[in-house]
Amino acid sequence: MRVTLAVVLSAAFLAFVSNFLHAQDYLTKDGQLTHQLKVVQLQGGFAGNTGVQYTIAPDGSWTSESIFKQKATPKNKGKLTEKDLAKLGVILEKYDLAKLPAKSGKPPGANPHTITFEFGKLNASLVGQMPPKLDPKNPTGTVESRFAGIWEGVVGLLTPEPSPKEKKDGQDAAIKKDRKQIDGTWRVVALEVDGNKVAEDVAKKLTVVNGSDGTWSLRSGDEEANKGTSTSDPTKKPQTIDFTITEGNGKGDQCLGIYELGEKTRKLCFPTTGKERPTEFSSAPGSGHILVTFEREKAK
Image (cartoon, rainbow, N blue to C red; front, top):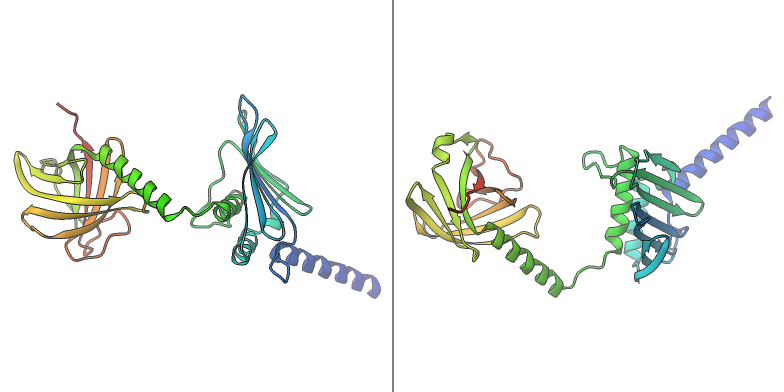
């Protein structure tokens, strides 16, 4: 009986240790992957499955391929650095790749979206109507969030860093697009100053006329109160805007704000002069933040 119990306990212990190592140690002692990693994302449709496939060899060499009707076409290739492989190991450990179920999710009636991970003998897939989303509050709390975490982590490592020129070109294009969209007259529909809401009838007397060159004019009824210039960066998160008063009360003052821009609505949050840029759209008492919501006025 003692021998049998010892054998059982030994087997259980070895199984525990094996599972623990398999779940935690995705890299060899010299920093390579213990197995090839393949990540596939497919979207079903009328024309069949389309998507992308990434394959990472143990030494960090990787390829990406586009998939259409089960045919893979090479897109890109490269090699992860030692630091990137270490980051990948952390991602696989954090989201516990080895403990993901072989099959999870609920197949939709049509156009399924599937993510599959292959790592050695492990094969795990998630199916649903939409791509999985990472839960920022509890990223490892659900299977869906863990799939999203691994997918986003792998894609982030394999997405080439844009060159300084590409970044600048992308930023310039985004600024041009935003300025074109912001051009016109916007009426204030909600205004909050340092946690105090301004009466709606008072707020709605205010309008801002924006130019596509970054100029602006604040009006109260038919009277112009201030004029100024602005620079914005829609590539930041949250999007940032810096504006200067060139005429009117506060001439010469500068403010650092954040903004959201929709087709017909716009939100702006900024502090009183000399304070740091807000990090969220709020105006708590004592913050000194001004929170404004605009609606675009129809052209007459």
